[in-house]
Image (cartoon, rainbow, N blue to C red):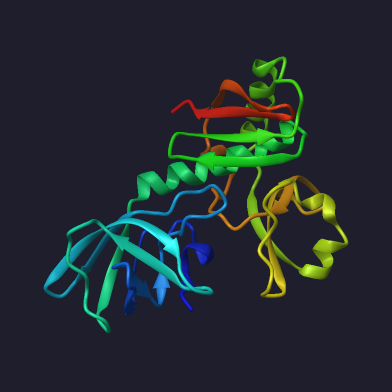
Length: 239
């Protein structure tokens, strides 16, 4: 089991870990990780590892067995030996872009109140697929609504509920095709705004900014038809 340091503090850029094993595919299994593993539409983090006598580039990060996290080195680079203590250094600029875009997509799901059928995140843009027959008619008005929420600079926080509590509140789940992971007994919620009147509240395992003002202004890009009841909407960071 890998301790998810990125969940305790998504702003943590550097930390130490112990190499527990190498995978058959050449990955590095660590006991703690500042690197977020690919999941929920958010890409795996990249960065660097250093240890006495060596270093390597982390190309991406993926989920292993159970709650293990595996660091994938750049092809052809050396691996730290099992048992070594490594210093993890996060590619912060890319991660912070993911955090800004991911949180902005939560706001887009508020401004476009339809079920979400898919999504994707990069460091400067993201998209959501909505269960809707027609594309948004006024993208500028939607962008204005999102930017107004961002300007309000509400806090972004996490909470936890039991699986039974989530079953009793099915409207918390906006995604129609991907359900929150179960098995641990607890579900992580991301709350935007105050507890008694949140701007948004939904299950999510990704990394987010601490306050909406960190996102900066956004704009909507193109929309695409991906099926009879599926419209894809792109969101871009303006800076």
